[in-house]
Length: 508
Image (spheres, rainbow, N blue to C red):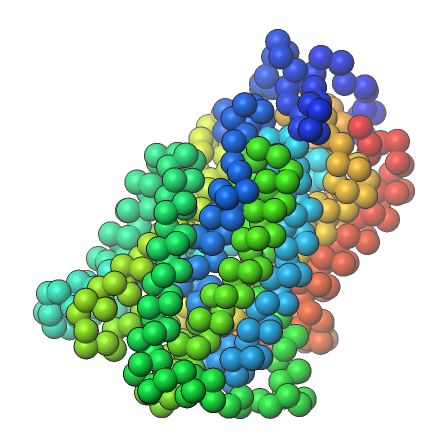
């Protein structure tokens, strides 16, 4: 099928309010057909109610979690000192905030989720490619976070029940009670997601401050064990500030960016509920870099303290909390881990892939069905293997995720901001044969840019500890800068290919 030339949208299709937000015009029929369902349609303006506080609380809830903790503690475990780890994480979150705000803009303006937003650049059918890639990454994250939550239940129950629980017979290398704890935490998240987005918003509002208090309590406990804050600050870097550090810095920085690369794509899934652009911009700017840096500082202080007290850096906070002899303290620490893990996993790793899977077949797959698919795939990915080693967790898992999703971000930003100047036709995002149909529903230019950027970004990546070697050894030097390479390559190539198509075919 050849390109379908765009036609001017009927004047009643959509209206733009004084504050710049756009919605389907009053009295105009909502989009229907095979590419629309209730979950994917634009959120009406009167239901875009999230404030600056809601977005800040969302980020506090997502940033203050066990996986974020292990980012910083993992850097300590591989040789950095507290200053180097905090610097790396702070810089990464300032950098990733930029694409977060750029892609998040379409949410409050048009009320659309990420997979619908991606239709403008990839095509109505082609949007399934980045949506499924992003969804599978979220499934991996969901599995990792669920394993962490199950681990907390396992240790918590073990403290209450005794060795009969912790020393139970092993299945697949773990006690069967650990698998049971994993299943319980898995089921708890399914219940929350089935209650809908408003329940998630309320949960994030109270979970955020609770988790932050818990982190400070862990810092106080570790400083007390170490005999003050001095030993926490005194743990030296194993790398120094020379060549050894800078060799590790680049891949570590890209991995830290990769941690939020999923959210930098699908943030419209949340900003679509925003009351205004200011609400999402201020909320994210206040919530992401500040809270991540603070949490990283708390994490590295506690991990440095564990190095001073126990002679080794214990990067897993659940394992660290289990070392306390104080039952009340242990219970508080592990409940904090549970709340933190629930907070981020439901918001970051269930909501978005649920929309992504729904986009594959809107008439057959609802938001809830997509969430259940995420839960099942999150187990099949075997998260206990991904989380077993800080080297593999940071440099293999996060590096691959960041490099691959950076390519998608480059295409989305180039299309929305450079080609379309943030102008979209809502009706055509759901209509076969419209301006976003391209060739048979696919924009092959976006696919080519994605493939090229992905190969350059992750083709030379190390796959240890999963396997030895690199897919394309000649690209090894680029792998350390995977996210930046993927984003830059796909952005430039996409713009070039779309320029050959003709400017008049890309704008509203």
